[in-house]
Image (cartoon, rainbow over all chains, first blue to last red; front, side, top):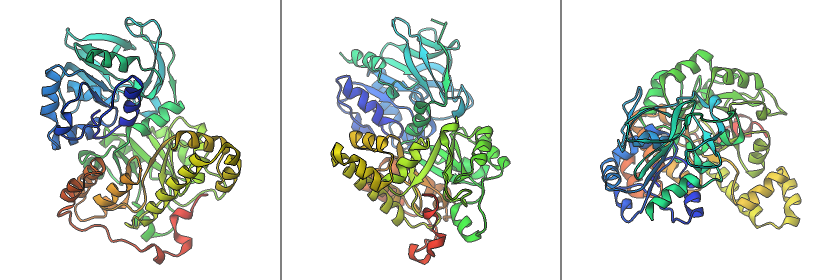
Length: 183
Length: 300
């Protein structure tokens, strides 16, 4: 997990519960030997700033484009995108899409709901906290779930992103998708 | 797959505590206007606390300290994209209602302001907006959580630039959590009585080995080393009140404290960011504050 800021601990718990060994990444050297990457929820401006300052942006880009299975949640989704509406923060550009920050409003509008996901029989308990949504995607990005008609879970090959926080629930299906990509 | 979802629920426990989880490993900075809020955001703050005066000025100014002017809070909300918190007086549920109606992201029921009720804290379950509250020990933290607080911070001694009280509170919290975890089921009720803690929550802490909510350090943090020390003591993140905007070069100090909070286990980085920061805020020795004027003793 990229551990510059955010809910790293919750992701670590999910990874361990799904059979993985969680590791914290703060510097480029920490990227050695990892099989998958999670960019957690947090404040995307803070994470982007620290990643730039500590020389992580290019190494992350290179590893992701070399096929490193990657999941970004909330702030992580923003960081993986190519553009943010009304912002000029550092981005990895791994998913060709435009993201709108705080798209549902402020904290009072943060919510939980049962989300229908493509190919899954049971709905996913999704927690949206000052969450972003995907505004526009390139045609080759697969939309796996939408809320109010706007994409909130997307994938392209080995890179996945969601606007909600699977790590705050007991449901490990999103994390399992990532771990399955490693095998 | 466009049909989406069933009903949305706002203001749930998970959503309230969840926002605090997202702030972990970050620094929340006190700001009194839009310019300071922008400096805080550009420096990497995860959130800002909107208030009329920083604690050092409240201490110097004396008199009754209240919730900030709503236009001030709104100005700050419009200036930044990160979450905005604001303070209400202990027990002042109408100030909290006003802050909720303004749409702030978190309400701090704070001992930095003059308490409005000597017996009751706010019933925080009645709100959609989540609350953070100060605590000096486990019992106080669990009483606040039982009232609906979704995040805890040490009280420290605000506006002093002196970290000693925050350290004391965090060490005590850690000690009492360990004590609860080591206690048998048959000791739980007596321990709850001694700590003044709701027994069900104490059982939860004993089982999990930690608080059910995020716990930040607050009160007297003025340097990158202060921040890194609080993180090493087990805090989840840092509030800096007067420490930034009462120092010589706020932007540089703000960035340094952010970096020290992320790399808190790396003394070389803490050393690097601590160089040439300019003057830190002037500190106050706790013993020089008359007992009646110690903010941490407000609330119970």
